[in-house]
Length: 122
Image (cartoon, rainbow, N blue to C red; front, side, top):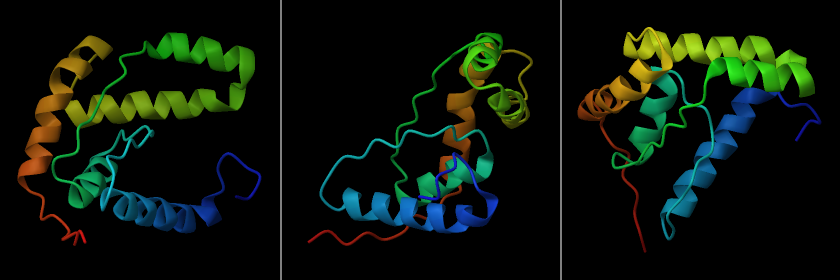
């Protein structure tokens, strides 16, 4: 949209479009949202749109991600560290195996406190 992978000033608009598109598509389709969702807020937002959303955790070693980023796009390295730290904080886990073990329970607990948006299907 703006030629950058990320632009802080554009993010509110990007998210408004993203969530509007998800809502619109859910009226008549199953939707796959490909994103990192490493915080309670980002997971909660999708659950508000679709309380039955299925989350698929891709258990990839952060050190492998860092190595790939070092070779291809070094500016992603701090983002990878932040995402890994977010997941550890979200789950209370120490390592990736523990994250993938605890994350489904964390999502289920978030799901319990959700007030879903009302989607009218015609």
